[in-house]
Image 1 (cartoon, one colour):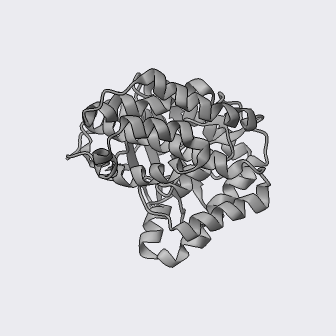
Image 2: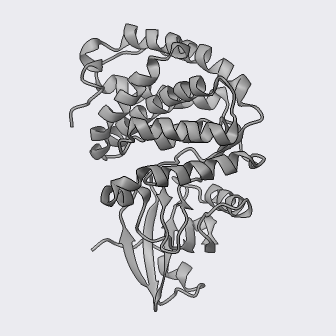
Image 3: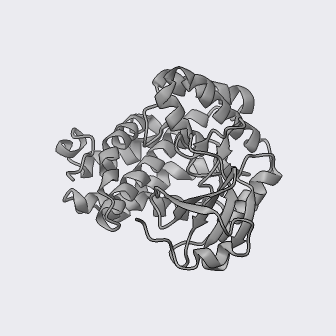
Length: 324
């Protein structure tokens, strides 16, 4: 039986859920833990995001901002951020991923609704969040050379890596202003399908003000499930019809695709090496395939040349796979 965190009963004692049944739920790629509370005929979700590893404050801030701007973030029922406790409404168990595993014919309809959420969000002024700036982009792509390259025996040259990315990202940053709210992890496992309908958002605590294409990349170049090329194309067209993002939009989509996928390769390797979560290594080949596709765009030529010079064909032909 999984041990409950210290302080859980003390926190619940100040809520209407003090006598609820507590059921631990599977965790994610962080230090956060989740519990479902059952009290009579109702349920609620309890998140434990303990400092110093986690800071629940941003989750609360972004949730309230999203709710105030017409988005379905979970209602906050009680919170003690200093001790890492947040009690929210329960969206249920069904995510987009589970629905599509059961009903793949719904893929286009469900993804259209998810793109509609982004298009509406992007029509609103961005939230009071930090900018997705060059420093942040570089810190993220550096995860690949900090974690993945050593794992596969490559001593990567960081200055040339960063120089290639700066060349690619500088034009994009000019087009990014004034920016939109970027949720940063908007994909099939973070979009809930509550029993009462609609789409519920979770895992948005790292929101920044950035580029329109970023959350589309997260949604359509999903590290955890294959999105059909036909659906990806249709969703990009659907977004363009609503948002009219400009002629460079799909070039920027490719750039941010490569940037995000490089980051994810690094994160998944770190999860295995540092955090003892090797299951994420099995997802790297999919991410590598998506990144290779992005690198074929001419806007990414400096980064593509770096990969050609630094990542041997034997690794790339293996689609970036790492032995478990």
